[in-house]
Image 1 (tube, one colour):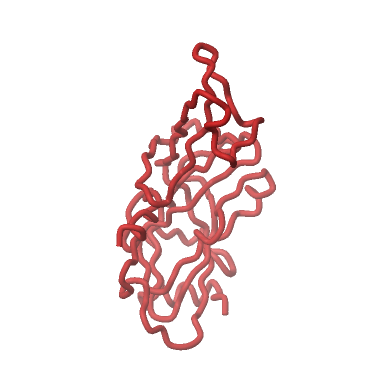
Image 2 (cartoon, helix red, strand yellow):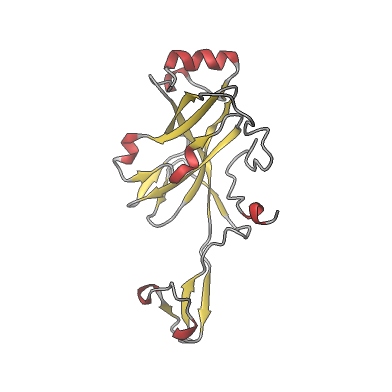
Length: 212
């Protein structure tokens, strides 16, 4: 059951919903607007050179191969490996805005710190006005928040065409729901909850799953 604006306020007062820097004007009938924190991160692209076409991995299509003019080597983008800790580049969105380019995933956080207690979970969704401009706010299941989680929300931005984003603009909205049935282990109790109490833009920690 999705919570109404009145119930969201009641659960905040009871301490079961935590929204830091909450502004009453950001409250909608069934959700709360969240804003874009200035810090962003991206995974830098790394390339591998090989001497012959036969050395290329089978998944590489000929159209994506680049030839280095000086050495005539073949060059392709190194894939991200979930087993490895990835390097990141971080930057601050200036007041005049920053242009997101297509075919890039930008990690971002919301200014608001979120917490879900007792029998409440949450889901982040895009602002339809930004979706109509071709901006994907949340990719896949990243916008789901388990009961017991508390911390910064780290999500992804992906543009279908160049688009400007500004610090502290409304970027997404969060809706809260009641969980049916008892919870055996909340997120804060479950072993291996890697993102509990995360602050700022936390990149993927998938590699920790392989280190066990």
